[in-house]
Image (cartoon, rainbow, N blue to C red; front, side, top):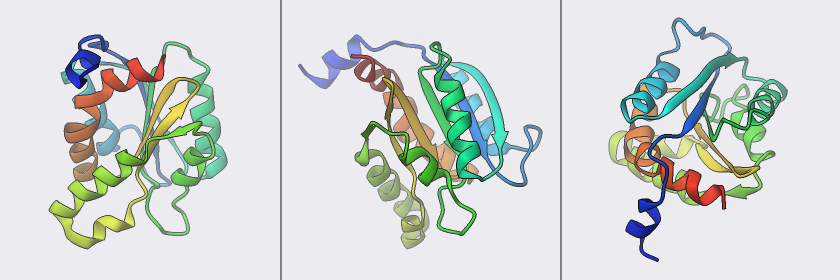
Amino acid sequence: MTIAEHRAGAPLSVHCFIVTVSDTRTLEDDSSGRTIADLLTAAGHVVAGRTVVRDDPEQVHSTIERHLADRSVQVIITTGGTGITSRDSTYEAVSTLLEKRLDGFGELFRMLSYQEIGPAAMLTRACAGLVARRVIVALPGSPGAVRLAMEKLVIPEIGHLVQQASK
């Protein structure tokens, strides 16, 4: 089956939940979470909700698990906490949940990011994978990085990802 045939059967609209991981942001000043929501909505997808949680692996982990319990949520997108500082814990929280990893996501994101910011792109641990037949994407907290990942990787493939994950 060709990629076009795969995509032909993909849903045009999916339900997504956005988790911002930050010790300093609130829903009111969370520009990255808002960017994700705006881009999803503009592409015809449904934002089931947004939340902000502290950069604490247990809080991130439990928040994701809580929203996985909502069977209508097909994709969870996190933003923030994917760097390498001592407080960045999203990668640890997400990676322990993943049943299947989409290593290509992080590789492609870093490649695209390198074209924009150079070797600093290696500092992100953006990742994606599947949990309970749902898609989880962990993005950096930078609004520019979020826009890059959403426009070049997530939005073009989100329906196809959901279709394949649900099989």
